[in-house]
Length: 625
Image 1 (cartoon, rainbow, N blue to C red):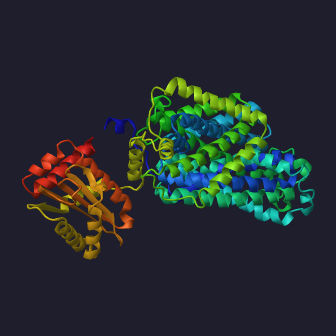
Image 2 (image 1 turned 120 degrees about the vertical axis):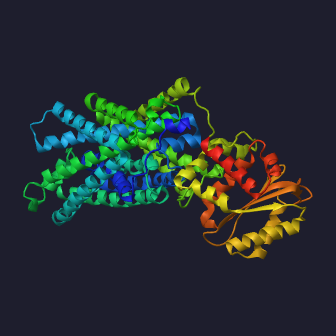
Image 3 (image 1 turned 180 degrees about the vertical axis):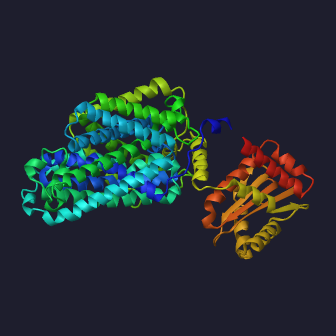
């Protein structure tokens, strides 16, 4: 109970449109309004292919994150996936990488606001540009502290305005494209296409940012994958069209030296009368605001999740009355302000891009480990298609990009990984021990039992939250379910007939089929919870079918010559559409039956009402605990 008070639940306030807007808004910023000019100088018009390659290389990580986030929709997203699959050491490294790469990218977006403010008012100095960025950082901090709902609404308005301006730019610009600008398509050779794809990879890094706020999404099993897929498809196409139009409109020598390439392209559209650059500057500011707003929202959830898991100080985990991690937001915001004021961001953006590639590799490995560990309660609503070939292709492509990006970014990321390792070793190592899926995979390979049920139980609790499974429903079922008190010894055949008859009446199912299933399962030792207590559970055909039967036999039911007499027998059957509730009900029944003195109380109960009360009182104790 105390733990729940410490960690209040985040509110599920983000719908599909908010999810799409957060993912899209996080993508459209420096990758579209600043980087194309720098990238064009390295690759020429073949920049279009670089964007296609980067877009395709995002797919394996996107599919992997979509599956993991529907199985584990928890704050921290990437960090949580890595930690629960590969352990707290890798979780620490991954969590810091996710946190700081998002913070760097968001800080860069805020500085971008200042860059385009100078375009609108050339009188601004560099320090004024930085103060503009700090001002917007403070504004977004206040919005995020007020709640994710306000952030989502702000993001929807920003993204709609931004997309409208970009579509206007594409439509008007298409009529004035100069085909000659695409001559000499790859002037620096085709190798430059891949290295440039690594440079602009950060353009797509925001796509999966929504996973960090998965705990605040409505219907995460549907909305997170759908929101990401829509965002990837629409924004990838938008990138290509905008860059195609920009290359076609702009003088190549000017484009290769411009930090405002889209505004430069818009200035070349005659019908806009010279105000095209200003219109696209407004669009750029909206884009940077959108990215910074979404980035602060997502980045603050990584330290929150790490704080809950004791990898960093507990203060980061606290949630305010508004349902937001206030300290985490303030700390992330303060870090971003320091970056804005004191650091050279160009090299940091390259490092952030490489960190994002590294994180995507970790996520792909996390998915493979979760799948191959065969943990019972790993039940994603969405499953990555073409597994594992998509994941293998993603690993190959991302590793290739890393080597194409050069030595300096690789060394910087190496230093970052070392920092994460040292932090875990000296701060968190003695505070944290938990099971993770890699242990289950090792257990499967070696055949040596080394795990308990901790990660399985945690995933089960996550499923309850994800599916909004109402515990009241279970309680109501126990209050009205059939309770059979067998006062004489029944042969296995007659007992199976009795249960099949009761189930057939209540579920409108075929009695003979149920009878055969029960007879077949009676000889299965897996029905035994512990001596004297057993359960029969089965998925039956149909829809919206679910029933529980409680059975007591003082003298003991003989179900097999190899099994001791059963005094408490619990029957749970459900149709496939009720599987989540079925699994949780089965687990709750097992937990109740494993209570100390349960069997003695069950045998000595006076009547059916007291039998039912034993279950209900044990259930209430469990809920209070």
